Length: 458
Image (cartoon, rainbow, N blue to C red; front, side, top):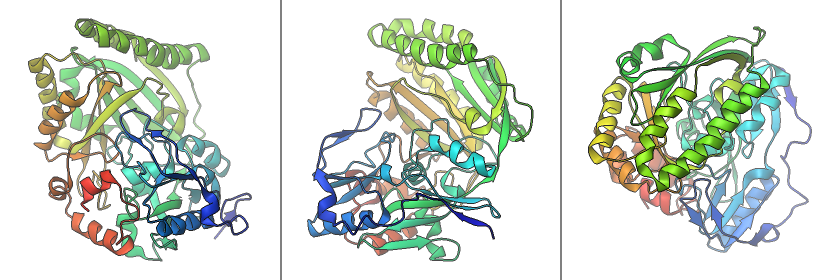
């Protein structure tokens, strides 16, 4: 087995630094969507696993709860720290490569946008990614981040091992050969089971993708949704409310050495920087102060966006740059229910007279066996609704949630929802098993916060 240790990996302590020396006075924290905030008593920025252990031990001595924070890209308060906030940015990078089994171990604070450069020299890639890459790997997997593709699972299902710093300040390794019974819980653990300091990812050989983006009639795409998901490696669509059209994205996997045909620099800037971010930011702002203009703006957007074709390495196709700030709710429902659910949201918007500027995003994913995965035990479709961050999202999100719960919907853990432990337990067959692992690993609720108390119970 060819296993390579990577120089410079943050795996050892820094001269036995004590937990008390690592704590700095807290400062106000806000998430990216500007919908959640916290005032931690202390902030810690460890640069080794030993330092994380010391921070947890010191927090226990002070009787303060501990929460790890990544990029703050969750729209819920899942990372809000009332006591000690642990910033994992110092635990990043490639720690080990198993080239024979195509596995890599990386620090929990590694951002997803760092992965292509880390994996490319070894001829590897992530099997699937979401469309935003700002998150850390620990945050993304702990909240159930996923991409699209009927045969592909979310990011957490790509993990084969993790290392946790536990509630007593110890280290717990979970893999196929160590504490394997915990894998279905700790790979998607909501930050409730410990601090994820490193993860081992099952990668695939590097690959390219052919991307085809086209505007199409909404009715046709809904009628053929199941077939489109089955026929394509990765299929998704965006529907701008108040229009009859959608932007479809169909991505086909190709060998890494396939000829590339990237978009030109000017076209890329125009589509992804000027239109998708600059112009869209301006139109959202106009819609906030002049709601009657939103339908016309959305109709114009459907004519000006999409309709392009290119081939790039996989990560460049999966991810897009998003600078327009928004708030989001996303639900997973049985895949076959997606067309009716989208039609229901369309009727809801029309009946309520809302003016919604942000598109609705629809994706798909394969079933998995993770206990708190939104795709647990079923092939899933994902429907995400958004609102510009300066608009009030509550009425819209509440109404859409009520509709999607009628389709056995499960909310994305890192996106806004209004459910609690009692309602969530009914949707997850292994919910009780997860709570039992939580009781075992964190009986004193060292890693608790208000959000976890709501969705898991005290």
